[in-house]
Image (tube, rainbow, N blue to C red; front, side, top):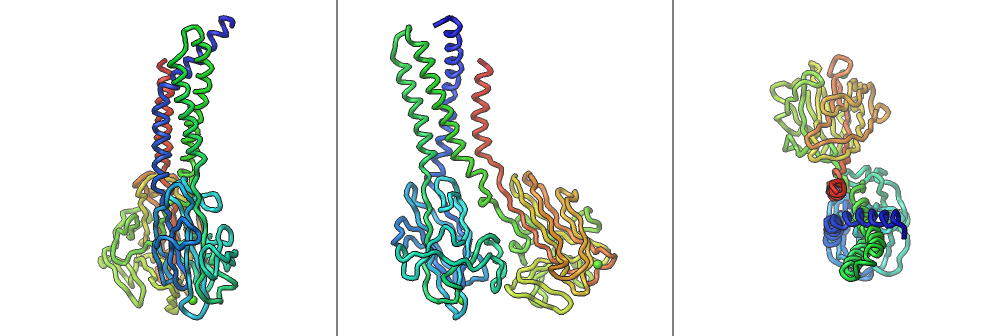
Length: 462
Ligand SMILES: [Ca+2]
Ligand SMILES: [Ca+2]
């Protein structure tokens, strides 16, 4: 071996040696991050059925399993959570049945809290669709066939079930008019691959240390160089394993927290979680929080007794699962309205980010007065306009929509605001559908980055 080749080997060895010194930290972080999800994966279900259902988790497809929860009203989504049994295939079991002699169907979206398990589609998100589900008329684990897709959440006669993904589809046998108990099953499979890769990396490290402990001085440099390379590869595979385990967790959109101005509406609290309802003299001047709530002819509202004329400015919400038609204006099922005031006061639904993250924002403004509605509508981020539009019309054909993705810190605000448009506030009922899907900042990836940063710093110091 020439001197320069020996120096090269020595240099490689040194750089890998510094890698190994930081390796326990990296392995530690990766091991913790891998171990935590493996022990406590949680299934979250947003589910409903026409007319009733029970949800179970089982480790045997032929056994019903552990009861998680049930519901008997298709009008509302039911949120249920259950802990998966680690290391084995779990089965999500739903029994659904009709209690009234008409159509029957099952709808839901399901997510897993981490990537230690996956659904039949290979991800941590599953919707009710024909794909990924088996169903039976006789019981679990037998006579399975593929459910029929009756159409997406939003179809008649049910309309949009708020709180369940709009991409979920109603499923049943035939066209939904055949009655009786129906058994739906889908597998939730553990994810051993990344954990195995991590174990492999750790084993490589241990082997390398054992070799280093023995051996004379003469053969040591070249041997250490070789095993250093092997150990280095092991270190890299450890780090990669950590990222592989983490990446799907952090990038998984189904784990977004969903904020929906209509679905989250409260008739008793203002502010209401991250939502606050109020009015302002100009679009961006001080927000006066509506202090008074009430119910008028079946519609919940908030206004300010110190500044109210013909009930406005105000916010209002139809708590019913059916349309409320007052002749001049209409509330669709579950609709949220903003109404401007007589002196051009803006009415607001203000959302404050409860944590930092990436938010998918979707807003639709619709004229709900037959006269028709004449308003100016806005979406603002921290008081700066993202979107400005006008409504001059009635019904779905008058609707204008806006969608964007924003990065927010905790405490940042998104403001959905409506002004009186043409200079008067008569007949200005404006439907507002506003939703924010907020994905938390990948804190665990940041932690991983910290570990790598420390490693690089060590190398620099050397
Ligand atoms: Ca029914
Ligand atoms: Ca107007």
